[in-house]
Amino acid sequence: CGDEGRIAKISALGYLGRSHYAINEYAESLAYYTEAVSLSDGMAQLDSVFLCNLYSNAGLVCEKLNDHQSAEEYYQRAINLIETESIDDKKLISTIYHNMAEVMVANKDYQGAVKNFEASLLIEYEIGDGVDELDLATIHRNLGYTYVFINEFDKAVYHIEKCKAIRESELDAFDRQVIDIYEQFGRIYTKKGEYERALEYYDVAHQKYMLSMQGQSIGAGMLYSSIGHLYYLMGSRSKAVKQLKKSKEILLMHYPEDHSLIQTLNQNISNLK
Image 1 (cartoon, helix red, strand yellow):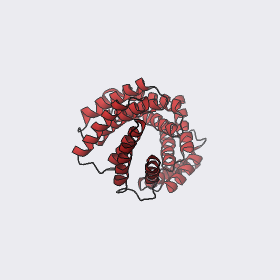
Image 2: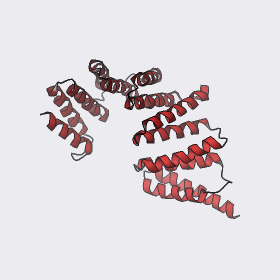
Image 3: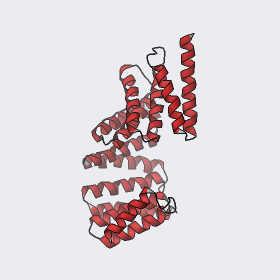
Image 4: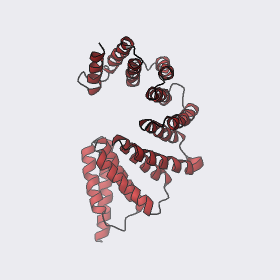
């Protein structure tokens, strides 16, 4: 009876954690998840899939609170279960590996991130016909850009190309996720030092923003900033300043003057004058 009551309380705490997460009350959500995890420790009766979900959800809340170290610890607990217990929910397993990888990117553990993105990708392909193609594209995209951080550009291009093929077959040509791919190619070739090629990809992204009436979106504002940085690397300071000012003009429609993005743009513009 005692164990049954404890299990019921853990389930109720998990429900409360999910409820507060859904309305963006992350501190409250984490308090419930933390208590649920504490109560679950040492309970052999709990289902492994239930525990994986519990640890994964706690990790997600920690990410929202920018506590990446705690998030990584929760995801690792879930992965330990995956590696020691018989868990058949491939989508859950893939999601946990993917979430762990994203946290590792935030913690600048790029090799660890690559390992976990690749594990997530492998499981998605094992799902077969039931795979969500857009989820698959996102993993390719995130894995590809992680390779940029460790200067493995051929692998980066390979995975971004995979993402591009899926997104362009599944989505409208002007969908934000399609535009994102051209921006990713721009960033890859900027990092690689192939500036003219980077500019070509950024130009395609810019055209798509303009033609789809998204020219004043946050994405477009960030694109102008990326182009400004590229022009700076190409030695054209006047063009760089023009792009950065355009970026600031658009982003001020979405953020206050004291936002970190605006402050960074102000500093970069000042440095280039």
